[in-house]
Image 1 (cartoon, rainbow, N blue to C red):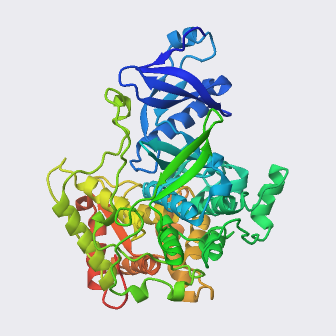
Image 2: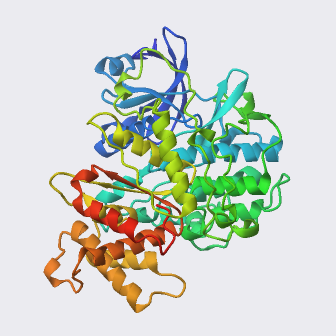
Image 3: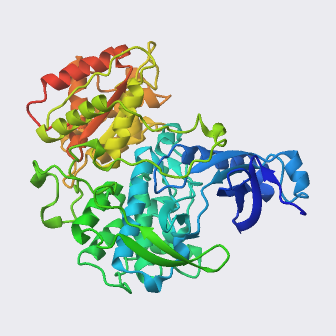
Length: 567
């Protein structure tokens, strides 16, 4: 190639790396001079539909996020026949590409000999911050590893950025899963057991936290906990071998090994459930890093050493370090920092603004129009409404009583937008478990409380016996189920299966609710069991079409004095 081609306003300059499916180039905007990275699908994959769809899914996933610790996508498109001709056949017309922020180096190239505890603490806090943002939007990264943690220069300093959401999993797609669907993907040395077994319905934020545990070992010892000569041996160790003790090459605070081992628990239920949970536990163990600027040495794309000054956010702006509400604090955290408890619940910030951040990446004028409909634009203003919603959430959390807030107004004023913002924000800080239901003038199988419960328990696509097994697993404690609990599980499974199992036969069911109140009592028990673990936020969209849902809300308000229901 005598002259490298242009992709829109970006001129390709030199290749930075090549993977199995794509090649990454350094490019520069011809008019503004801003450097960028361009990822282009290559070879046979560029002609295969499922790989092209996967690439487009990565673009959509990254465009949805807006966070200072996640790489920003500037633009995307497809290579034209003219580019294929100019590249002398080395690039294929129709291949998708995306334009992103350009990194100077990655965590994989950091000099381990210069890492200190403040480095490790700061890196982990920033990664947890990025994961919390992604998880709140239903996205599980599933490929967290040193190569996908980047450092981008920002003047005299550098910012950590999480990248490569190519195998990210949207929890919402569970609604379309079939019972036999199994997908195995990820990097073996950093894969959680449920990934290795291809159990999509069991994957969630805790899956990324397992990978973070592997990354902790890599950061502090120079190698992940399980790394063998063959892939099969490595995967088998994740599934069967005991977790090795943490033997760091740097000084770490007391309790840090226990924190890391909880991330690596083989059973997802034994790990932290949220990034915010892990971040608060880490802060309780370690306190804040004492340095505001942390010098690192890494290797750049050209192999030369790169000196980086990693930004350590001030305490009043770091996303997961909250100003905590002290009220009832003794009931929201495990006593004496006991991380063996499955109920490690972060206290709730008194204001949603305490740690609110959005991406501060450079904006390049004249690009990105193709991403406009994909982006989740930041909510602007509406402070009075947002404050009122957050205050109600705080009241429900600390009074233990259900609170109902009605968002009313003409079509197009942003009611659903405001509700979804609350769900994302409260999820990020670990404040609530979010359940969503929609309603339509003509009710369908995707409407109402039954579908809400099915989506939350990940029952969609399962036959009734599997639904019952899932519901029983949810309710079963260490002592199992008594007869009354078993009957309630069977009744709830029938209600859920009616909307998700195409072979469901209503006439053959043993449980027939005589009155709506009997059914509502079962719903209430499910919500109470969920709220016992973490307060709930129910987002009930277009609820004016849901007469049954409205009757249930009335039942909930009238029958909430006998137990703790922070909803």
